[in-house]
Image (cartoon, rainbow, N blue to C red; front, top):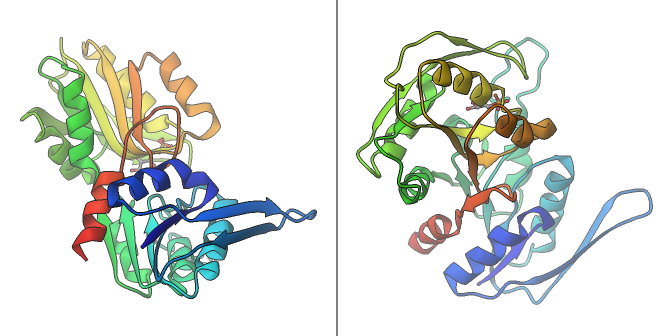
Length: 282
Ligand code: R5P
């Protein structure tokens, strides 16, 4: 077995190879003068773990090319972050079901797929091969433990993320709750006023994705007004679009913590061990 990764998942790819105690296959990446992607792999094995987060259109194309380059090997595809997964329904007539499009494209030639805290596990049914979703809730809980916060409240921004928050909170038997979020547009959210037990204590808002940071910024404002001492934000996928990290820090968030499913300077939690465990199991 070897691990091979796209350019945007080099750190996680290397960590996963180390966890699995297998070599990393060598790949060179470049572009044609017109911008088209090119890559070339060498030294593949009979079984290849392909690691690639789809963080943008380029990384999607690169991952499809990498799958094709590994065609003579049994491919276990690790898709730590899957862009387009939030368009998991045709919300309006005439829209594509984008999650299905990406799932179908990435199923081609692979034998099984591992996702990590995919936005909606319902998306898994669109893959044409067996797919399983892994959660980093325990890893996030373990990281929060290292912060040594006094009686933190673990808070989900909406009821959809409540079970995730509960799982994170189980690391320290902490209290957990949720807010009431309604999304108005891609960048705007409305948070219904809701009193939570935030007074005189730290709060950690946990979510699967921080994209524009709008959800976290709105929630943090409400929590500070309710007397929270410090507000932290922790997520699996730090999309951090349009300067979200700086904006969140400027609004008084104490720290923004994410995993290496998307490789960022604030990726303090690794998905490697969790993924390695799942690969070893099947
Ligand atoms: C949506 O339901 C997700 O779970 C996140 O809450 C959302 O993607 C966060 O987006 P933003 O950071 O743009 O508010």
